[in-house]
Length: 173
Image (cartoon, rainbow, N blue to C red; front, top):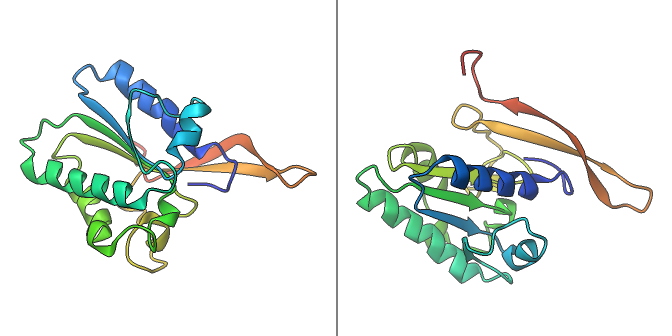
C-alpha cells in the first residue's frame, strides 16, 4: 500500500522473484495488472510470468480472478502459485461484479490452505481499494501490510522515499 510513485509494484516484483528463487516447489507466477505490458517493459514483471489484464483488458483480468477461485476450489493444498494483483484500487467498476464477488474473502480465507502466495498492491487498505465491496473498513487483522512512502518532486512527479512501515505482524512473527 502506498502513494503513487512509492515503488509498490517494484517491491511486489522483487517479492515475486524472491519467491521463484526460494520456493523451489513454486509452479507458476501470475500477475493481474491492467498496466502489465508497461511493467514488463520496465522490468518490474518478468516476461515468463503469466500476465493478465495488459492494456486495460479488464475481461482478461476478471477471468484470471475466476481462475484463482477455481484453483482454490480444486486445491488439494498443493497449488504452489505466486499471485500478484496490482492496481487493485481500479478493479471495482472495471472488473465484472461476478468476477469480484468474494475476492477478499477468498484470498483471506483460502489462499493459505491452497498454498497460494498472494500479494495485493493498492493505494489504500479500505475495502473498496482492495477490490471488495464499497466501504472504508480496513482489513488489518487479515493481512500483513507494507505501507510505502513517496515524495513529490518540484515538477510534480512522485519518487519513492525508500521508507515504509510494516503492519499486521505480531512481535513473535
